[in-house]
Image 1 (cartoon, rainbow, N blue to C red):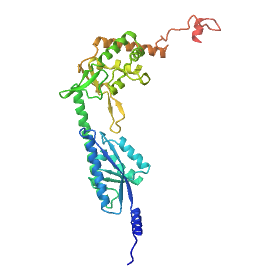
Image 2: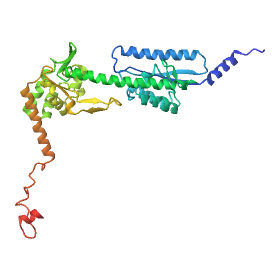
Image 3: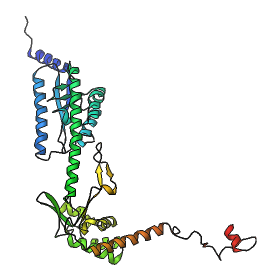
Image 4: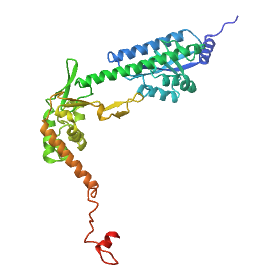
Length: 369
């Protein structure tokens, strides 16, 4: 048998490798919103499990090769909907042809909504020519005989869906209980306050750096009866607005004047409308839908949780009522300017003694005409 040159052997090996089906994989990892500890570590573990699977898969020389192209992650995102930044980026790369294989640690990391998860795995991904692999569940749509696992995957998806709904109910109940106890469960505290733990409760405490500014806003508003006048005075003192203060923790703008973005009418009005500064905590005004976390719904007033004396007020009850009355007067004036004849008595003829009938010359005729 004749010898084969190294060049020909290498060319033959390269040709064989080119004939192997190659899958461009995207690893997807998600951390549930109900887990707050070691977020990055948990996601990294999921990614490592997927990478280990790919490494072992390629070593088996099955005639197929999986190449990892990108890792997509979502931190603190619920599995009950698929409106997640990392997952949407994965879908976009699938549409662009960059990815034709999706690998997850298990089906629960992919999603806990039974119907939507099944729709992606059984309809959308096959239509787009995408192979789906759930490592821990032994589920691989590109593997022969995998149809036998379909029923098991459907049952597991259903269990995941039921778990998500059960957890959602428990989480909402727990959240309601904390609100009723007077615990502040919101995000960043309102301007003028800081949030700290007091035993099991999270309470609002006056922020020594900004509490006096809140009092100034109320006092000056009652004096001027103008949102804009208050905003102008705050800006003349170069006081940072709430969003800027939360970001920099600087009460005053110390940099160049060109970079200063100050207060506006809306920012002043939001502070003046909040009952929080009178020591009243109102929570549960809005909620999110299960399908889309970004879609907030306004709840009826009966569902709000109102706790009086939940924290130290920054302004007295009398000053708050004066500001409330001032806001009411401004609202009435604004409405009357928009509709100048809205409250005019309909039975009164405003053209009396001004217009006359062109035929008989009487005022009555003008009124009827």
